[in-house]
Length: 238
Length: 282
Image 1 (cartoon, rainbow over the protein chains, first blue to last red):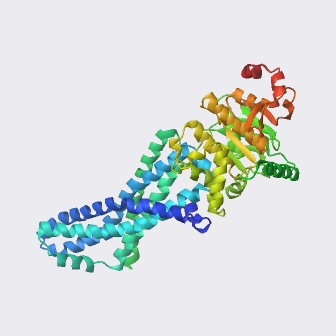
Image 2: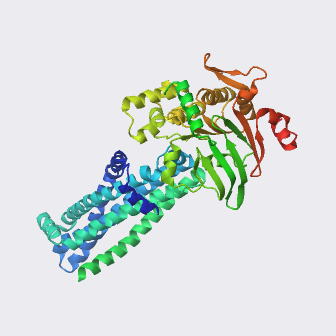
Image 3: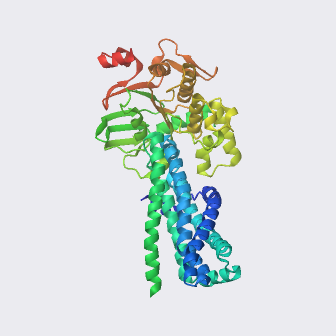
């Protein structure tokens, strides 16, 4: 119901555009350093692990393709989703939970403002939008990290790495990689807001809500990733 | 803020145009997790009247206020506020009605990420059709009513408990609601600060003639309200001259085990023969 109402509110006034921008700043720019770092080092680790195996088969030239596909289709969206879930689903749950236990949500309703419109919808819109762009950044830094690791540890030519990494990508890969953050962003924001608004039992309840939000969002991201991967593979196999 | 007589005159005209009670509860019941909190209570709040609600902890006093504002819905019975049946009213329609009803929460419930100015202006800013200088003017007037103009740029965490209650009152009265609901406005405050809050409540009652429901644990607060009036000339609360108590629009309601055991004015309360009530007020 919360998820449906958060979308339905997009077609009702007021839209709280300023709140959306504020949340986009908090979620997007606030998460940028962790997304860049995790993306870069994940790509680097992926290159190291796959490079060793590829060398045994004399296929080290494929390392760029492997890192690129792995990051764009799978690791970029999932790692970014999990990072943003850890940072923002917890933030949303604790912020809204604190507002619930201090009666600020009731006060907002009493003052004639719909908390769903004012608090939930801007967070959902901002998370979906920013996670989309954060995933692109994570993909780029992941491939770059893979390039650095390939060059440093396996002596792969940088030009060759980048051209193979770029050329292997087709519409299906990009579509799969960019559809996921839209769903993950929706999961992160709605789960974070749901546990926050449902928080009961004072500060202990807020702490519980925060933990539950991160756990639930992380599990759902991994599960949805599995089904979206299967769905897109089926969709593009025909 | 408009001049007090202008608001009071408008109130008088409104109440004549709408002769129904400001708030009416008809046989209202509600239970939380199998515990019956209110069991078929009925009462009315007349226009311009303040009704103090007493009862031991857990007797359902705050629940009455939340029901009157439509924040929670009763299991049975009907509730009318300003002539409108809110019992099964849609949330979107309730938002409209709540623009005419204000509440001061027990712990103030100020938005801790907003300054005092933004808290007090919240409702005006949400309405979106009030000019910026008009918002500023009304915020200053509301804060001057509670004598806290100097706190405009502070955050709630930088205020004392009493100051937070006063800011909460300013936030509530900025749009001149027709009905005010106070949830233990003096709870946990020292006697001097409590007197300041009660003086503000009396001022709101006598100057703006706002209909109010006031939940309190402190009997002395309600008795003070029943025996004092606000003198506009001297701008302070004064005791009523002997024999004039009937003119104060103040009455009392006592809850026990989810039921109303008393609903009347101060003389009736003092003359009651009910053992429980006599012990409670002694």
